Image (cartoon, rainbow, N blue to C red; front, side):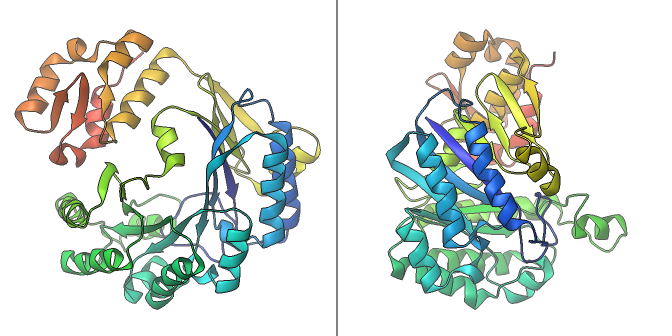
Amino acid sequence: MAGIYLHVPFCKQACHYCDFHFSTNTEIRKDLVHAMGEEISLQRNYLQGEPLQTVYFGGGTPSLLDKKELEFLLKTIYRIHKVSAAAEITLETNPDDLSHSKLVDLRSLGINRLSIGIQSFDDEILRYLNRIHFAATAIRSVELALETGFDNISIDLIYAIPGLTTEAWKRNIARAIQLQPQHISAYTLTIEEKTAFGKWFAQGKLIPVDETLAAEQLELLMSELSSAGYRQYEISNFARPGYESRHNSSYWKGAKYLGIGPSAHSYNQTTRQYNASNNHLYVRSIKEGKIPAEKEVLKKGDHINDYILTTLRTDIGCNLSVLKRDFDYDLLSLHSGYLHELQNHNLISVEDDHLKLTEAGRLLADKISSDLFLIE
């Protein structure tokens, strides 16, 4: 199972929390889209002929691209790669981009999954985040997508936002459930250094939500969505049966993927590749037939730590037999004391040779994972 990710680095405006690579200057959009098509060709051998099971347009805001631009990129992918007839093709979108005509165009191109960046159903919170849409627009975008025939819709939400009470968060969850999307991704707000929130924090103008409140809001999310029939198949991702994100799941399973565009990452189970996060440099390099990327050859410890980090975030957990067989890493023996302590505190369970986090353990996932890493 292989996938391709296309990073579209343009946005109408900068959200206060986002540290992904993007630009609000779209002057070179045409050249950059063409360069992405060229990179697909230049990278034709990266996946070693594996058929594509998923195609994912991320960003940035890929819904800013028009029908011709999306069609060009998709046709290039289909010309160069073998794409499964049942491939999952996802487009990240902003609610304000989703008119009826836009949605009709997207369906006609074969895009069969939408990821809508709603973030909140509270206009005051949306203004605080510097989102460009209103709550009513977000609600209407989901309704329009359903009316147009999309039957695989994901929405994004953010919690642990300063000023967002747990009661207000509960109303957000209820509104999300009311819309009946097939998938919900919910992320705790992270204060990143090179963002508006990061600068406010450094200036003492922003106080992050304390860990206790953030944990309370995550626990509420898990409880409410479980009651509504959503399975938490990964810490930040909830789906109705059969609607798990196949693209993101492939990351957690260690499948190969090719990243196209500025700042995109690629992984082929031997190396990891990082494209430059500079639009002009990217276009210039591609025109010269060169991919502006750094390559990292993965060592044993990288494979082990990646496997622990990604699998522990899922409800399937970390397969201890795979760690022994593929990496000669006996996690139970090497960390027996620590794992016994975690079990005593009901943070993990070991079932059928799988190490899993409990609901309480999911609140401490990053720390538990890093404590189990191989240090070389």
